[in-house]
Length: 178
Image 1 (cartoon, rainbow, N blue to C red):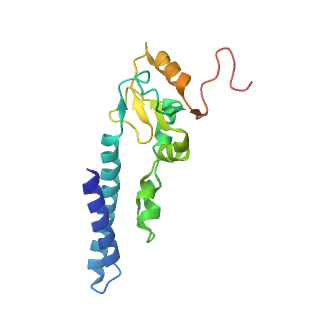
Image 2 (cartoon, rainbow, N blue to C red; image 1 turned 90 degrees about the horizontal axis):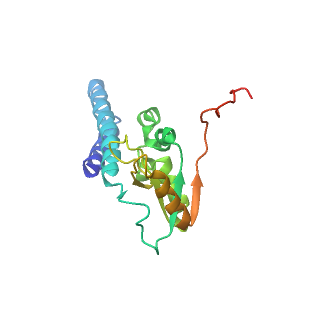
Image 3 (cartoon, rainbow, N blue to C red; image 1 turned 60 degrees about the vertical axis):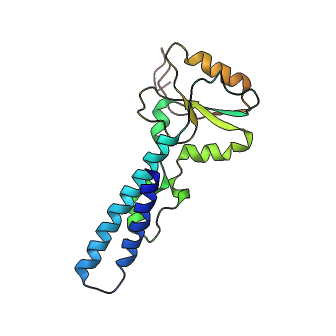
């Protein structure tokens, strides 16, 4: 799927480049439309294909003892935000001459993982409602009864813990205004 995406992106770039060539005005709009569709389809295919390749761990307790890990803790509600990529800003892609590069197809979580890669491989718990793992950290999907033990085992041997704090629910007994 990723290969198809890169081919579509390349062809789309060519079509967008042709819109500046000589020819009838209607043909230029046709090349523009074809290029835009290919670029959008290419970005989608590359991102979808990469999600199929994201590692899924059988257990956080069973990780190799000599492997350095970075534990990424965040709310599952924040996964959508961490899955954003620069290439998804369609207006920027379609109305400028800047086309997506591999760097544009890195999610925010990918970027966090790359920043902390000197400390080890980034791992995280995955939301069991996900159909495919999110891009970024290697995921383990734990049940409601085992997730705490998995996280504690990973924390015991982690080289670093990255905590993404965000707005959450108000504590019981406290109002939002206090």
